[in-house]
Length: 167
Image (cartoon, rainbow, N blue to C red):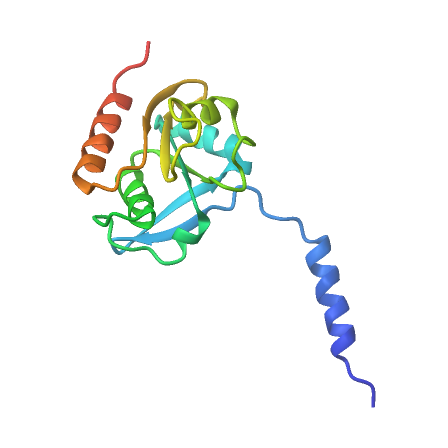
């Protein structure tokens, strides 16, 4: 009797190859007990569309995907805590885009890449760039700070400034 396992593997492979990937599939993490979603950089156009429709800025979070696996306390000093803090502070206030700061370095929107690398050409992730809904203007840059209170103030200031009418 022949095994059907090889046939099943071939069938599954054919389905996976011929099934189109869903564009703009967001990644979602739990922060402080609530889900927060972000687009991936490849889905920037969908993020722009949503930002324009909702009249929200784009919050571009550059960090390591490893920190998304196990979200910690936003008050901690680590990059994991700072990334979770960015998701918590901006979730609902901005349309989020997540960038793998290591794999996608220098491979994303030039405006964002320039903002991330100024003034420090070797910035320390996580860093956040707030953009206008069209992703044509930098509204604020929030660099990594291990101190929760300083991060909190930086997010507060950036959120308030991004809410001001642009002219």
